[in-house]
Amino acid sequence: MTITHRHLMILVLMSNYFLFGLLLNSVGIVILQSINSFGINKESAALLEGFKDLPIAIVSFFVASLLPRMGYRNAMMLAVSLMLLASLAMPVIASFWATKLFFLCVGAAFALIKVSVYASVGLLTNNKQQHASLLNSIEGVFMCGVLSGYWIFSAFIDDQNPGSSAWLNVYWLLAGLCAVNLILMIRVKPEGQMPSDSGAELSDHSVATGTSAQQDFVAMLRLVLQPLVYSFMGAMFLYVLIEQGIGTWLPTFNNQVLKLPASIAVQITSLFALSLALGRLGAGWLLRFIPWHLFLAGCILAMASLILLTLPLAHNVETNVDSHWFNLPLAAYLFPLIGLFMAPIYPLLNSLVLSSLPRSQQSSMAGLIIIFSALGGTTGSIITGTVFNQFDGQTAFYLALIPMTCIFLLIFHLKRISN
Image: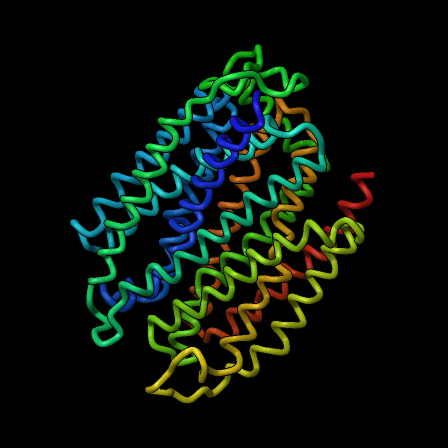
């Protein structure tokens, strides 16, 4: 395989991950706009996270072990095609049930994309260092997609008429992005040989396992019984619970607790995505000097400290009718910086467990990662939304300290059993 061809395939993976970073993490914006446009309560809006995450878990559970037979490129093309149709339907139907259907499609499509991307990283790299580097770069591109989403959506929000459905016009643009990605995958048809030690061709059927579909599925389930795997999955579940609980509800927190206009509330949330992107890009350099377990423990302690220091600043904030980027409450600037310390945890855990397994098991492992991530995301969003509705936004975010403590303890357990 030529270097040029390898770069084209990496471009396909990154462009798809950018697109789904934008689509997947728009759920927090859509929750805020659904509350304003469709008049639903927070507990009902929180269900959107479940419509997104549960299909991710279900599709990953049943399909992850079969994707090598289907072909990673075919799976990605199917996922992007589904999102093209779903994006076109959103402004036409314009109702809350349509948003549920949209995120149902997002979840199912993302399961195909993530398993394909994670498994393809193993095919495009030759060692653990290359694997961690490429995976962190792809996850960084994902966060760039998340970051751009806040600004793209905010451009379609009408602050003068909070109940307006004009924001749904953003989906025409998103449909166009889906079409561009689909054309890219059609034109960049995989050919040639993979690295000689991979035992696979980067073709429409990327990895031949030599076993039946039933055997592949059972092998995926058996992975969970390995102490290293289920310990990593526990940490993964708790991490995503924190990230989705905060990320999904931060626009609503900014709007209802910090009293910011909806468009500004969405825009300032982009600091959270920017922090995640910078944190993931910078982690690769820092990890050359700091042992991974000490690095992760430091990240958890920094996250907890930022919560304890900044959330008190969000109490009794007065409404400012002339809010703009340079006169917001201090908490609006400081709290999203939690993403800097949160960012490295997810890709580092993923890389450690994936690179410890043979390439033939990485598709199944990616499926398990997605399942536990999806369950954690749904749980985090529902818990945060319920507490937000019953108490207040500060209390909802303070609860993140509990899973942080659990992850801190798990880090040293993982270090001990991974030696």
